[in-house]
Image 1: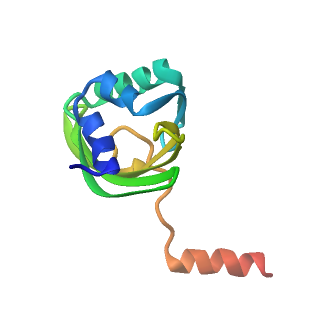
Image 2 (image 1 turned 90 degrees about the vertical axis):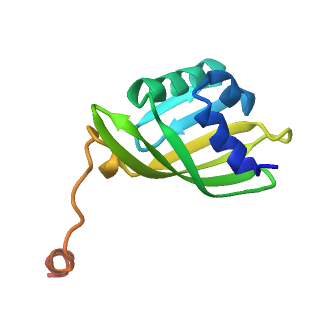
Image 3 (image 1 turned 120 degrees about the horizontal axis):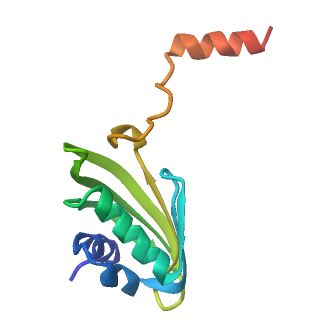
Amino acid sequence: MPSWSETFIDAFNTHEVEPMQALTSPDIHWEDVSGHIEFRGPDGVRDMVQLTLAAVPDCKFIHHFGMKQDNSYVVEWTMAGTIFGQEFSCRGASVGETDDAGLIVHNRDYWDSRSFPGMPGGPENPSMEEVEAKKAALNT
């Protein structure tokens, strides 16, 4: 029998709205933190699934780790697929809370924007020398 976190990933991999809606409360608040997008309610879940599939129609989520304790959970995953004609994979994690019936009331997705084609990747990590120089400049 799959774990709670495997069921979460399996719902995404159906490429259908209903399995994901079945995991969520009617009061769901779904945040795509890295994408700066928020979704609310069953219609929001539908929009989130449809947006994901519009961007990456062949997306596949791979389960790495998950745990659920009381009303809190975390799921670590990789999403792979094709976007803009380019194959990619992107590591991420979902963190959230459920109600007493086990339905998701708040989910926050965090994923590596640098590995997602077409997304601004943010600044490159500075070298240690740059960090030390900035620190020294602040202390003078």
